Length: 256
Image 1 (cartoon, rainbow, N blue to C red):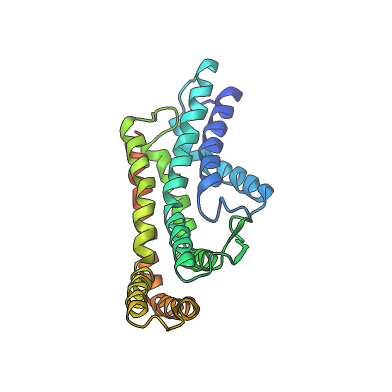
Image 2: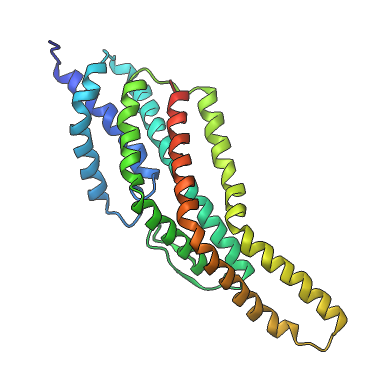
């Protein structure tokens, strides 16, 4: 039987809470600005109590001088998982911003309920659909399960932020631009082809009022293609979210 001192119990709670705090800060849904801080704090404390029996078995003695490094390493683990799991939403936001410019809605801003900042209509629409799919698939529960399992193969006080961990995290963040362009590709390609066609028409018939008709035509075509593509979004986002969870779990293995 393991006898824990008050200091040992404090260290266990410190490690669990710090790792979960990093997740709650950046993970989608949990890190949303629309969720009150007291709710996030209460959820973190509740999860800490639930995970305590699991983590206490991996307890090691830590000197007071090692606490700053312990807090930093545990926080980075949670932050890394939160950032990776949020990359799909960043790409969706970027795709919405690109399409807002292309179809002429870049000047129409509304309050994004997730970030509590003003964003374009198309970007907010993208974010809302992605969040609905995210919740429908139960990804938040899967994300919590990943964090709970991380204490098995990445015990507290043993992880270190290696070069592979940082390099992989940077590469994943850099992939947001590519993924955002891919999500916007159907509407982006159609509007670019329309711009070329209207440019040729303007050269062939200069009397056509293309400056007046162009934005309206681009808006109608862009929204039509966007509406058609909505049929494929649930399957597409389910693959992207599951891939991001696999990437987050792989990132945890690199920290070991």
